[in-house]
Figure 1: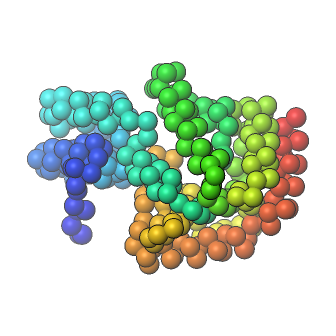
Figure 2: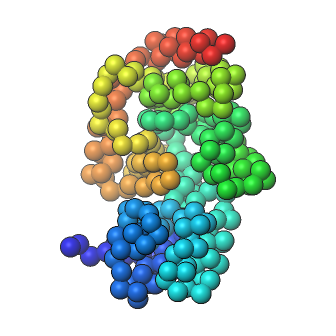
Length: 274
């Protein structure tokens, strides 16, 4: 069995939480699977909590605190870890994103945050964070909107985005809201620094079916890759890993419709939402 990944509690509040959780679990003599069975929750989620990649929901955190005899320590840490607008694994990515001169994105399920309307972002956040208050949701919407400023500056990065066909066909926020979202995509695609492609269902399987992918390039420094699922993300900096995802992205570009044809498809779907 491989040794557990070393943790750095100083990296973030989520990492500090994860370090504390692992210590308590080890002291109890349980494996991640055994602890997960007692919640109950998948042991892979326990691993993500310990690595600081994900912060548990409030009810799960309270069960962890009680089961591990943390005497409220996990509850207190959780409150601080949840106060930031973005989880720590997202904050790291956002820092890189702001410095990039080129972004290549494949979006498996949703419009990228940089191209979302407020209504679309609000609908996504409400369904994914049902315990948050209206004020918390609006804070997250505002934070997401602020990120979009990087596309409107004097020297915006190139944003090349491949959208899975499901992204444009799933009516997030209702049909009128989705029509406005697609209209916004068409508007942004008229700018010279935003390019959109649609990957049609008919292309079948492809090398990035596990989630979304972003490749970032910089004025100075090596490229990085970022993979993301609904509740976690991972930043990859090792050259061989980044090269592997860059090849996967090349294959996706070859499978996707050309930009001009993609805009025709987006416009056609937009009209269906009338």
